[in-house]
Image (cartoon, rainbow, N blue to C red; front, side):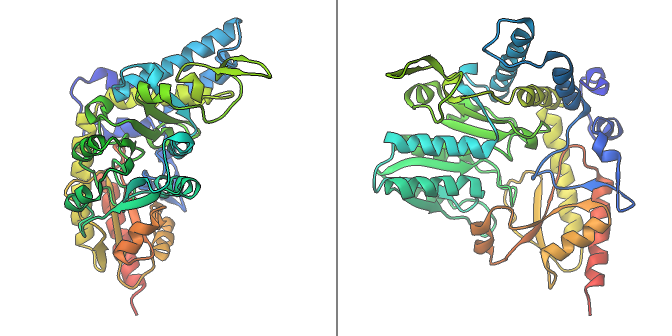
Length: 419
């Protein structure tokens, strides 16, 4: 844990930004001779030294496979891995660590549920509700499921602001609704969805609810019991942890009911050529060697975020985002895409007459990393009738000065492309 976190009871992130940034070694480098301005946090966040060291320590002194060995290293590794599960359970306010399944990422978590639900939960003409805001990872797996079962997708539309059209959403629920799969925070617009009313409505119709929390977990406190969702997923690499690890939270009654997704070691209690019996959740869903070091790194990342605290993170990021919006609106040629009522650290925009890929390339020459493209949200781009946008996404280690650098570079970009 960073020493500055240990020393402070009430955190002012702006006041302590220098110390925060020192915890992230990668932020000190230069790109094309310019100081790195990293504004692609929605794609992946950078890692604090504490996470890097925790994973290095595991490989240097604790590395062994888990749940299978009686030797000392295996017992240590098993303890660290299961401790990481407990950390995640507390982080999400799950009822039990047994409701936490480790996967490769949020995408695999969604695919797991979509595949398992197809065994006996979904029938022809059943309905699966999505929204126009979804990432491809929360679209394509459900399309696969519909192709296999004859179920149908129904799409909750958005308003031009980028907020969900809740009146239209209510009308889409019905007796054939089986699943509501919905993002908590849009990866393209930053829209924070008001989930409780839709989750409650889905449950009135007996539907299961899966929430894609990949963009929410880094920015807002998540309480799965308060949400009352049936499944919640997120990726480690978007919350300052390593790649290669994700989380699937599932209510225990669902995890008890659903069959395994994959077969192999560690997900069984007994195997014969005639019959196999399965382990209890969560191990029933973790076939083979799991992401041990990655889970340890994720737990350390969660502790780091909790050490700062979501109240401080939310306050700082909200003010930084508002400052960025003001600076962008002052920049010639900029058109914001979506202006939701509640936004989480993501701003998408286009510049008149300039393709987003060209903007991203020019910004890169100034050392500024943004994302330019459709952001794996092509239906959303189609809604706004644009092929792509430029996305600046912020983290608590970004600064007001970096926003100024972005605005200045965009002004230069505008002038560069003028006839």
